[in-house]
Image 1: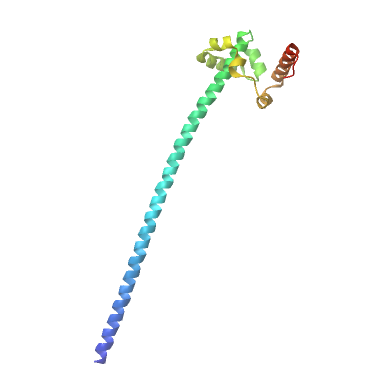
Image 2 (image 1 turned 45 degrees about the vertical axis):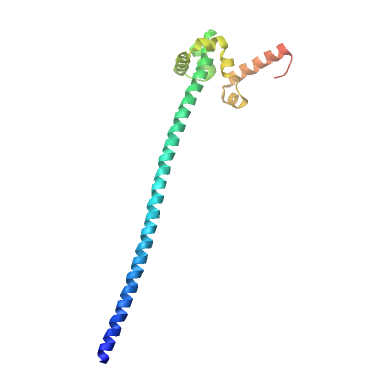
Amino acid sequence: MAYNATTKAARAAARTAALAAAEELAARTRANMADLAAFFSARERAEAVDDWLAEKVAAAREQARLRREEQRRAGGVALAAMAARGESARSIAGMAGLEVKAVRELLRLAESRGVDACREQGAAEAVGPPSDGERAAFPPVVNEVINSSADVDESRTGESP
């Protein structure tokens, strides 16, 4: 009989251990499922951020392209005003520090905007005077012309700019 009691106790202990191992495995599996669900959710949100960023970058590039085009047109209008005063494309290119081809391209771009209205208004009024930061990028010849025109304005009004 002792043998039966020992065998029954051993079987009961084995069942208890197996049950505890199964419960531990089930708990670990549930925890793994919860963690995997959190992982996949986070990965989807990260991919959505990449899509959002791509859309924002595309929109910013388009906005930059439009702004760049508008500023190129404004520069073309200024060059067109110089051409309307009788300056040749070659002389404008020399003063602006550009190639003649680039000057002609900007003049064509300005024509697409409607140069006649801007010529009547004057390019300087249409674009506005350059800032000190913009003047630093100008070739020295242009800065001399700007400074000499400021001296002429000063002598007319008797005031300092």
